Image (cartoon, rainbow, N blue to C red):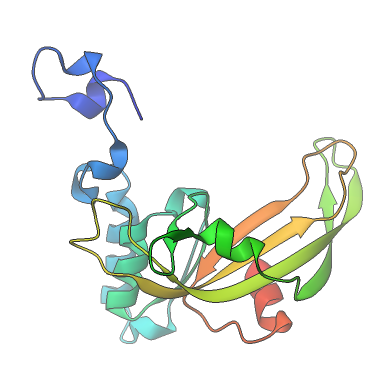
Length: 184
């Protein structure tokens, strides 16, 4: 929830005293609509939108964006931060992923804030599942069949936070090589 007059503009004299659930505001009224506009512009400039792969950080974790890519035939790999509803809507993505076994181990080189390199060992899980729209948006958007990839660093490294990457994609992930490709 967010408190502030910018998000509440035009909602009466007492608007700044109330909280607004930002997931209830239509995407067209948010700054994040620029993600959808970018996807639309990319598709318009390409003769084959299916050849385009959109890549985004956690800011791109927008259900409407997933749906827009699907409707245009574009592919995507987005980092996520929202624990969305999954399956029949009674489960969550995190709950489904917790039930999955590690399917790959991958080593990467990382640097701490001082630039000191180290090796991180990642346990990788991936699973194709139904991802549901947020409550309140399920009348406008339907569920999507997507692959979720979680990479969790083993142990606690010195000088930095452990890696915990969560991705969602509509690209094929049939094996550990595919999952590692998306992480890279």
